[in-house]
Image (cartoon, rainbow, N blue to C red; front, side):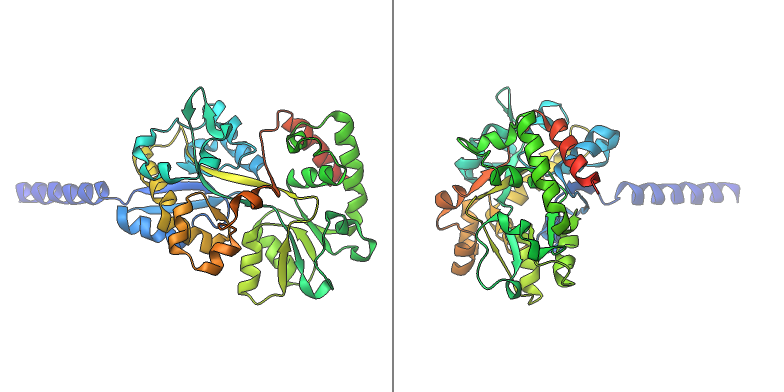
Length: 353
């Protein structure tokens, strides 16, 4: 009897061990909203018999804070924008990539892959994923014609009806109005103390018109839905989501132009799933996946071959038919050497009553 019990016990242990060993692997992401939508992530899960678990960030600084605060080990893949990608790579928080393991990398736009943003000591630390502007989004019922300048945010008749992003992009926007993007847009990311003080003064003048500073894309969409605001700096994702809800919305790049971003996919140094992470990077920059990402987010794909899966009107809306001229309107975020000082100014604006 004891011998039979022991045999049954050992069999049970083996069954439990076998079931545990077949546990579904999980790939953990820390990415921008819209980058883990089931419409395209489900295909990866089915192909590689895994689960993708995503956490979302509201700003580049939030991403950096989590990585430096000891949370890096919680994530396998991140999607930093062009303003922090360089510092993240330089800090050793992500691994240099073996590009031979990402065949679709060769298809990505050279305009993106040749930029120095994720290149450190001749090693590449990230793959361009999507890019786009921070446009002005507005309720078409509140404007008789398309607003053509960021200055409309300061118009007294829109008191309490404007929203700005709780992000340094709002600092850049105010700097543009003050002409600090001359003679080169890169000056936006290298402002002097005197210029930052002038930007602070300009933003303090804006505060009476600000209904709320939004932190997540969903929050901004809700502000429009609830008719709390009529205009904001936002993301093309917000415009796309609101249009799907039949909300009377449009977006524009004002005459001062706007800042924008190139989001990269990077593998964290602390990841225990680097093999699966490589497969995810390849999957996400393949043409078909890129087209699905663009359909969801309304962001421009890094892989131009995605156009073969898009409708003619989608190609036009994404400006894939005239990329060069479109990019001239966008001042892509760059590394900000004095980011702490910028954040100090921005926090003083937020704290002011």
